[in-house]
Length: 456
Ligand code: UDP
Ligand code: G50
Image (tube, rainbow, N blue to C red):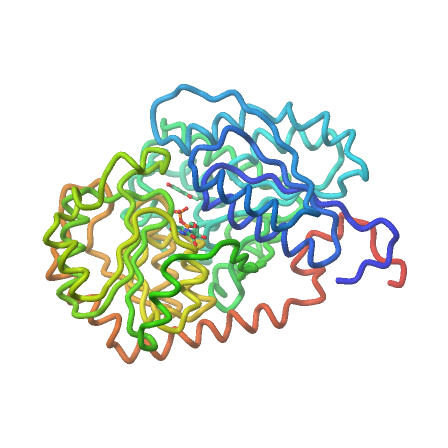
């Protein structure tokens, strides 16, 4: 977008806690910069994980023209998921923002706010008159569930049944994020309050594209899910940042095309030790070489406490060497890996950013959702042709183990199935179309709130 105004629009982005929230908002920030906007990023400290701290440092040094604003929130010493506790700590801090919004020079013309912060931030921001867009970091399928959830709860009083979303279909109880079955849980209260607050936003940006979730996007934008819902603007797939080298790259370079299974459950999912071992057995038995990123703790600050040998056993570590596979304990630059031609399949928890990265590069996915919104996202993987989902496999936290033998069978199917092998590249072609067709940007960027170019 070429702004011919002397003053380019100034967009400030407000991410929430966790890599799944920080990454897409930074990707969006980089895109806005490419389009000539002045960009500020509001960063709340302290961060929960080392991955977030490392990421933000590298991101800001790679994009020195992005102005970062550091705000300190008071940590809450509350029990529960540390990322959700941090959502709440940030949600209690909108007052920190107000002096900034009134004094920043040049003035902020629009804001992009993570969805988890909507209900406490939007009322404070509204007094400034700055128009605010929500950034929804999950799928449009999940957005439709979020949008309709308050109506569903009102009608049913309970959240323990299937959910019929108008224009979208029936969501089985098993696919609804488990925490939402408990109406008294803080996460559920926040979820409902945020959903209702979306109505005050100027629009909702979401990392998806029309051809990936056409029906849901249409139902949302035609007011079928919730009448008068703000405009939902698909901005995906987002720009990949490739900030760091990854040690796995040299190893991948030596592997034949489409021969490697990449296995990762995202930035904050630690499987049980028993399940990790079964997965190891399954990967070995599949007969394919694998690149497996293992997390043994939800928050990576504690990571160094556990040795991989302790989890997998010396014998397994030896056999990995023999088989020529690779196991990484910690962090890899996932975009670089999924882009690599040696990768032929992705065993994924279906965090939405991971799904979109697989879609962008056409890597077939074996969906193994673990928590939260991931079954909703796995549904998109299956319906779009990006991959397969074994729906009876257990969620994280369930007692039932998925056995190595079963995993081996499904991994083989993923790597050998001609159906998935041929449909996944089709998804990537549509993703590339979405990028190429990025309309004159007014559709994809929050610009009606900013000065229009003089030549219009
Ligand atoms: N990621 C990465 N390396 C890792 C783990 C995760 O680069 O070792 C990135 C991944 O590419 C994605 C984000 O971190 O962009 C994780 O978000 P996602 O929504 O996939 O899952 P979450 O971690 O929030 O469960
Ligand atoms: C993570 C999780 C559970 C869960 C979700 C997660 C979502 C995403 C959408 O991302 O549902 C969403 C989350 C919070 C909120 C509004 C919308 O306040 O572990 O359900």
